Amino acid sequence: MFSMSREAFGPEFVFGTATASYQIEGGQTDGRGTCIWDTFSATPGNVKGGETGKIACDHYNRWPEDLELIQRGGFNGYRFSFAWPRLIPEGTGAINQPGIDFYDRLIDGMLERGIQPFATLYHWDLPSTLQDRGGWMNRDIANWFADYAVLIQQKFGDRLKAIATINEPWCVAFLSHYLGVHAPGYRDIRAAARAMHHVLFAHGTAIKALRAEGASNLGIVLNLQKCEPASQSDEDKAASHLFDGVFNRWYLDGVFRGIYPQDVLDLLKPHMPKGFEADMGVVSAPLDWVGINYYSRSLLAHDPENPSFPVKSVDGPLEKTDIGWEIYPQGLEDLLVRVAREYTSGPIYVTENGMAEVDEVEDSRRVDYYDAHLKALLKAKEQGANMRGYFAWSLLDNYEWAEGYSKRFGLVRVDYETQKRTPKASYRAFQGMLHNG
Image (tube, rainbow, N blue to C red; front, side, top):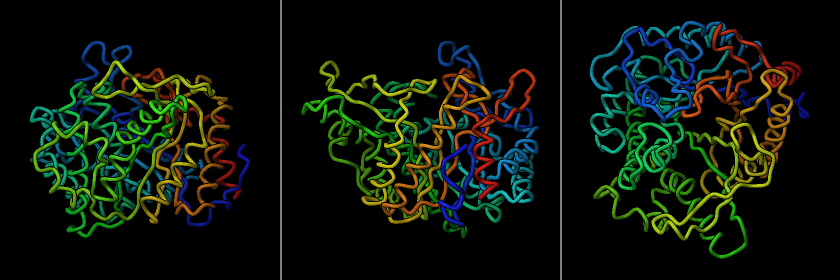
């Protein structure tokens, strides 16, 4: 069980759990179009075992059972994402009514169970037809995304507690266009530079369009990494600062200050879209809240063999999760305080936090992980961070992107053969705290 009580967080604090459409839904027979993860995962070598999200957790059909799990766990919030290709199969144009009907059922099901819907518009499942047109490398995606956002507001906005535009723009842009780990799998600095700007320009364009439709409680979800030098050498400190620029400051400075960090621009300027500076007022459109996803830290060292980006990660000494990430709750406290002091006094949610674990039911290490990170959140709150909620990642074991089904992050175990759900010790720990005050 956890070492703190529910009341320590305050009566208005939201406790929820989080998922993403491609990772859990399946249900690809209702007129849904294909997305970049369908084709990326179908390409040999991209995903462990060649596994795809075609069936995933069959949430498309089993959503009532999953909402019951959320309710029984004592959670009063659910962070989910819409699948763009399920609603607009070609990315633009014709709407898929069965997709609208699915999310109507899902949202109404949340409200009937007293669960607040926290919606994310984009959690990485870009329609394939838009990738054919350049995807996040094409400036036009800002208008495609804004039109999609308007559809969401018109169809569902009156029932949503909050809307986030983009989940983890670093992953959308850098991980997927420079490192090539995620779809669409580019390894190209020009592609990355364009995606890094266009993802934030699309975010701001959507915020403006949503406001025009009367939407409120709008935010973005940023994944932040605690960056620390591998040694106290000047070279390693510089490497850590640069990586912090690419991972954290690019998105924080862009969204909250309307500028990009100069040290990163020095690397990317030759590859940036022409005239990007004129877009920064849109990029920094005012927000009602920000979501922070946190998992671990990075230890960074100077890499003399890579002059274009002279940074390399170093394996750290701390205990690690099953995916190899160090367990470092101090990093969450530090980042929350940093965001509150340097960027915004507004509401902050921890929108994802969790760990992959080998033990599939009696996951005591995960209980300890959550306990330590909840303590870190409370410490940040004591230091002035305007903390409003915490969403555990994830409700279910699910499709973990390039790792396929090999890594289990869920509070609830999923048997992928039978789709049987089995609550774990970590689920019971939340249940105990949330039901007992």
